[in-house]
Length: 196
Image (cartoon, rainbow, N blue to C red; front, side, top):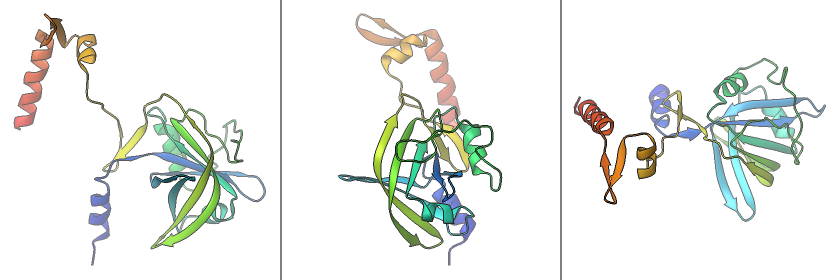
């Protein structure tokens, strides 16, 4: 038998993006929640999926929704993620909310957004898995918010020679890249940390 806490910690080793999924109930009221269980499924037709606990109070809204939207959050949207992760509160209070082309509430500031027509729902253990056909999408040039080991993070891309030059850590001499004094100091400090 699995220890649930250890299993959850092991799953936390996988870095995920952070999303907010939105829909409207039968009366048109907006609903949304933070989820990191988002994945691409198919390019033709374009399909994505996400999952929700069977114990969630918003499960009936998403089960009945004809459309929903997944917002991949930008790195500066941690507060928005926290807001939509809280149970019970009106998460849309004081937000000026319009709908996307598919009819689901649109959260501004995202890195990417996928408006979907609800297609299938499956039960997988203690979660419902929602699969939707993407009918509209948008992408901004924004760094995504990520989640790892129970904490938020940011993407750190490998630096290029131009990045090192711009930061004053390297310089070009005779078409070769060489560390500056600052770059050498940083490298020595990192090597010391690595030896610990």
